[in-house]
Image 1 (tube, rainbow, N blue to C red):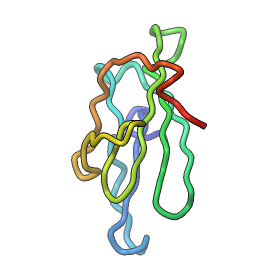
Image 2 (cartoon, rainbow, N blue to C red):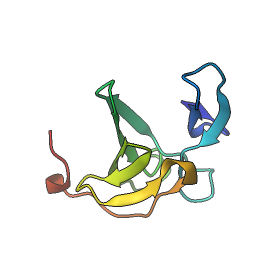
Image 3 (cartoon, rainbow, N blue to C red):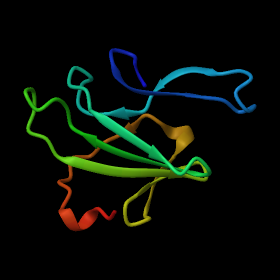
Image 4 (cartoon, rainbow, N blue to C red):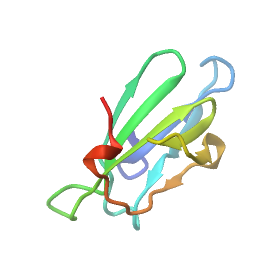
Length: 104
């Protein structure tokens, strides 16, 4: 979802959705004036995939990034640990994706 100045944000719950925690910033790039664009995909069981950019193409030279959430943690495409979900917002580091970084 987009909340908090239209930045990518998440709402979470620790009790199956009975009570929701107010939106939290999910991915932070730069100062917040430039907002990343995010696409989400899930297996509806345990994993959520995220593809995102640095910002709108008219505002910034973009790169494409990929993360996935599983078991309370965020991981890079290659499975290496990035951070746990409790530590969001995730401060995106600029790293250009290569076609070989992504698999379908």
